[in-house]
Image (tube, rainbow over the protein chains, first blue to last red):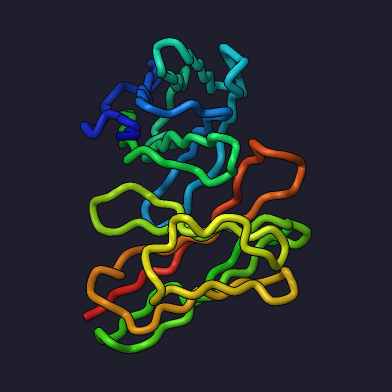
Length: 111
Length: 115
């Protein structure tokens, strides 16, 4: 069956360090992979999109990698700040536009 | 520009009653999506409109759910009759029509509690 896995355990890191979040999937052939941020009581907010033929994408302190052979995406936040504390969601789009979400990883950045 | 808005923010109804959720997408966005998150689970796709047409309704759980988007602007999602398992947060999202892979802009969600 199709499955998207994100670390269900919260990730705690120290301010200034790099946070790395993982998204693994099975039985999908996504055309696009997106990362969203969600704060409590709010809707997801789009961060980055990477296409199946792209290996890496960057935006300011954010970097996403996409390995379709390993069926894995890594999401990095460099020089992390307490304001980066949130839940980060991985979402796959097979080209139909309907997004399939992972359960999210909660990031806590300690000052 | 104004973001995606949803109304109400919270609804508490009894089993068997009817509830209608409303979503106003970002102006000019042809694509409108409904998703929901039930307790402890991931966000799941319900359906996708392109303008006023249903493009994909493969995620609708059953025929108690009816979505409309008259005139291709705002959308409503009606649950009739509501069951306990319908409780959760219903998100609406919209995107432009630049081709596939567009980022989606989400509203704050409607928290539905069925008692």
